[in-house]
Length: 109
Image (tube, rainbow, N blue to C red; front, side, top):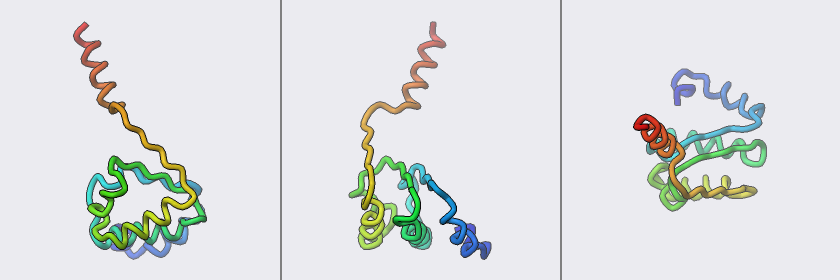
């Protein structure tokens, strides 16, 4: 959105094919604005079958509509993301929480 606001979105979009791996971390942590959701959809669509994209999220797919605002946009995005994909579900204790507990236990000894 910053690139769009600063009138450099087109230049940024032209650079995307050179990016071999795009990593989007914590998708869904904060809901996107309508414009933000549309821009992210456009980015994913441009990269579809052209470049690798890795996304991390704590949300199951059925809750992504809350982030993107509409079922239609979410469905279209998931359609592109889940085609030719490896989905890794990691259900377990938080790595950060484990480190924090270990530090506290170590400090007590």
